[in-house]
Length: 235
Image 1: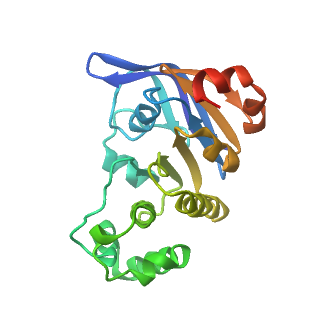
Image 2: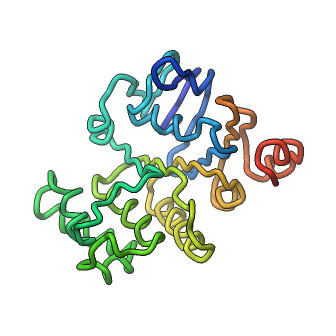
C-alpha cells in the first residue's frame, strides 16, 4: 500500500522554484531514502510534504488524501511526523519536560503509555530523563528529536539529515534506531546527503539533484551506476 504519493511536484519558496516535476512514492512499512548533493532540494521535498514550502504544481497524497494547503499541525494530526535538520528541542528543559511538552495534548494515560514506549526504544533517554536537553551530546539530541516526533504516534516519519555532524559510532546507533522504528511498523522517508549511510538501511532510493529525480530504484541498483555515484554523490 502506498502511504505517500508525490506526483509531478514543483515547489519552492516565493519566486524561487527548487523542485521540478518530482515524483516519489513510499510504500507502507518501508524505509525510503532520498539522497543527493547539497542544495539538491531534499529538504524542500520534506518541507513540501509538511506544509512548509510553496507548491506550484502537482499533488501530495497521504493515504489518498491531498495534504497540499494544510498547515503543519493539521498534517501532524493526520499521522505525519517531521524531524527537521535544524534542532527543534528545548535546550533549557529536561528530556522528560521536552516529551511532556510534545505530548501536551494527549490524555494523561496515553502520555505515559507513549513515554514508556519511547523509553523502551531509547533507553539512553530514560537514563537522561532529568538531564537538561542542552547538555546532551549530538547523538542524544537527535534521538530526543525523533522521540518528540514519535509522541504523536505518526504513521509516516520524515527524517532530514539526522546523521549530520555525528561521530561514526553515533551515526551507527541512530540508524539502528531507524531500522527499529521500521520493525515497529513506522514508515520512514529519510533524506541524507551522505548516500552510503542511507543505502545500507533503505528499501528504495531516489537520487535528487538540481531539483529533479535522476534515479529511482533499489539501493543496489544505484550502487551499480558508477556514473551517477561519481557525478552526484562523490562515491
